[in-house]
Length: 373
Image (cartoon, rainbow, N blue to C red):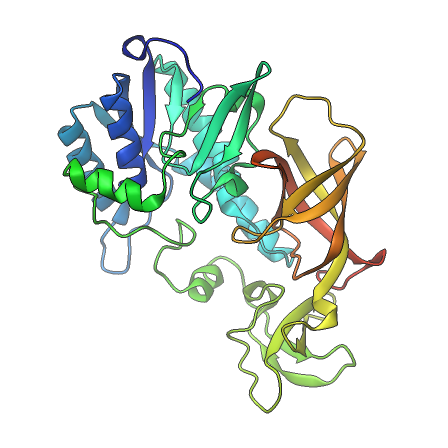
């Protein structure tokens, strides 16, 4: 926790999703004596084909939990802001042949910006969420640390949070492992104790990704080719594929499995090759844009760190060079597989998340790869 104030004099707004993590976050804060308000954010009109809106079901779960805990609750609608700031970005990135990370953008623009501002207007001292992360005040700054549960740590998705935002945030379950969170929910008899975790992108839900994306962007089928120009098959549209992807290519035959190695946007060609460790899947550096540090310490122009390029990945030692106001050049100590433009590169120093940026271009021995272009 990042507060020394008397809990009874401290108002905390909890962003509640209707899941077990945010339910337990609210329960723990209430138990510790904080003045807690539960708020459900509606970011997307997700009525399914049968006319059922899963957001309505989730809000009903929020109501049950808040009544059990004994805290006030209500819902707030951020659908317009979500469309403008997150979904539009999501579509534009796919149109450009990249693989976006809407969760990072949602945290930056909605949960910890629009929602945080809303909470402060309600007289909140802090906004709390059910993320697996920690905040710690040290040397006059708020540092974001990985969650204790390494399998659930979500600092990767929180990499764009600023010092100002972090100083107003609480992550009550960051010190816990997921099984313990479930146990607490069951011990407290919370309605969400056995509720299945939601997975995937919130606005797609359980729907077929291809069908969903095809509603918003016209698919342009084309050839799948090897780097020597041999046509191997047809693709359904470049936007449906990501670097390193194996499944869904529909390429049979003998030998090693086939993987997506790159995209040639000009010719609308998906570049493929065989072998998990195909040499063309490995790169040695990248250029990143839309950079942001969680720390307000003056970072040197060149420094060492570790980095993640996707959520469930082991850290990789890197050298970071700040090459512009909004640009980094990141060199890996060892060649690294399937670095994907549009995804995030997130920097760490031990347990502390230093910040992150969007991967823009990928290089192998200083030569730009044909991942996107």
